[in-house]
Length: 130
Image (cartoon, rainbow, N blue to C red; front, side):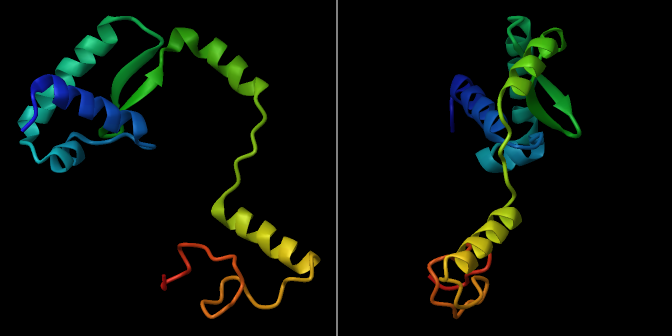
C-alpha cells in the first residue's frame, strides 16, 4: 500500500507514458486499489496540476485521463512541431523497407516473415520461437 503522495506520483507517471487516455478503472487495476481511492487521487492530482497554470493540463477525455498542452500555447507548440522533420514509420513500412533492402543487396533468400527463414530479420509479432 502506497502513501497518497506515492500513489499520485505513480498515477502521474502512468498517465504520462500512456499513448491513449488511461481510465481510472485501468489505474485501479494496475495499482490494486479501490476505484474510489483512484478517483479521489485523480481529482486531487487534477486540481493540483491544473492549479499551477503551467504549460500542461491534466484532463479527462474519452473515458480516461491524459496530459495535454494548454490551448493558449497551441500556436507555439504547432510552430515547434512544424519545424521538426517527421520520419515515423509503421512496423509494416519498416518491414517493407527491410524486404526491399534484402532483395536489392542480394541477401533476399527467403521470406523474412517465414518462421523457418534463416534470415536475421525477424519481427517479434511474427516470430513464435525464441
